[in-house]
Image 1 (cartoon, rainbow, N blue to C red):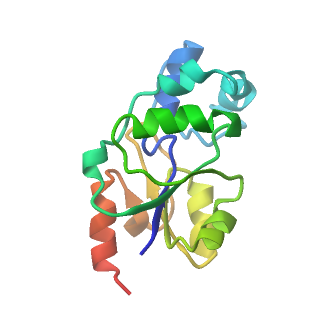
Image 2: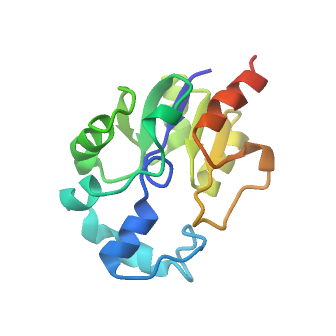
Image 3: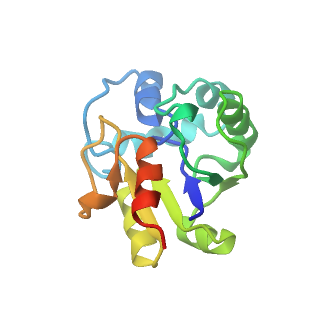
Length: 170
């Protein structure tokens, strides 16, 4: 099975980094709630679109040594103009070399690249991937409340991907 990984809130600690940058407390929340408690993210995220220091300075949630599967690609919605910075940040820390792709439609990108599994933190992205006939695994960091209905497709550590692949070989 071919696997792609999202970057923010899967490999990198975007939400904690953005809280620090915004001088806001880091709370356990539904970071995908852009109309209520996390509206401030939607309203201010554009301010880091051109800030390479912000993107290079994000801490890591995952360790490259946790990856027990082949990474076919990294698919991210983070600013396209920051892809070079993101690649430096990712590969400079020892993550497996693979194409880094900006995408607004991850399901379409997966199909184009013949990817079977996407590990992403966004419940709506995971639902769309699963509804599209592919496999979405929701990476759920400790600070995230929102999760998908299918608990068998929620992971909290990248090493769980290898276990999932072994259990679900075609």
